[in-house]
Image (cartoon, rainbow, N blue to C red; front, side, top):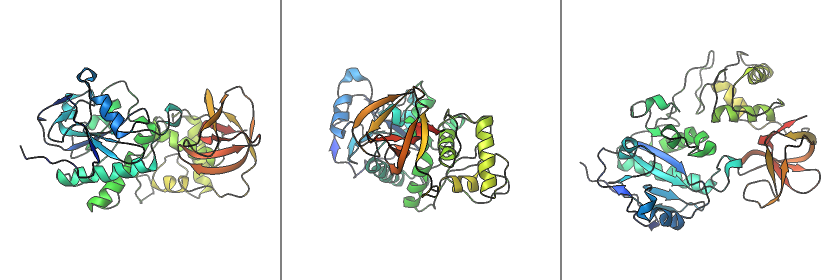
Length: 338
């Protein structure tokens, strides 16, 4: 087996006893995990240190962007609930600056370090490009897809919907660093739409993280329905209405051109104030627009209406809204206009 090296990007090392040495396959896969907590690289190393833990990862990334190593690349980590996957994959745990209510959000610094680390791993292990199709049926078929996620091997949410939704972006940015162009995310071709995108084609019947993003963006453009991550009749009608408004083919299929318009920020100026109701069971109110601000109160889905006076971008949500009461900001991803 070819001698394997480790990343020079690491700033902390604590080798875990929870590993199999050496790995039995060449490295040809990347598996990104979330820590389900805001752990530093040192704390993550301490978590993996006891042999009783029976878990580890090759690398870990803190919210501050620092990178730690816990299992050398020549060895198999115990990370993905699959010996077959872990033998061929480099596993990376990423700290979260948000909780489950933010889909296990990660910081911009952590995401930037993740992209650099993955590119470094690919370069040293002769992985010419990353390919992501969000398709669990392609596990092990690395010429078609060489990224996997923990939720495909066990009943877990890992890596969280936020990181899962970022896989296409990660692929695009890593492949730029590898010199392979802007993206190797392979999607179907939408009828009459010839451009490409890093988001998958969506149709009625689809479900999951990308549908949630779709529904959130549609609500920002005036739709008003509960975000349930399921592409049903209401989502189909909202897609067709949006496509008609943008002079696109109104076939209800969300492809490259539809995504391109959806991901643009809606025109501002006349959108506020407006009234919303909460669609989640509970929603945190924060001092500022982002999960990096302290929680000041938690609202419950009590059918009360709340007036939004100002909108702002921020970490952990597509868009934040400032409440008229002045107590703080809420994520608009979990609201609908009334």
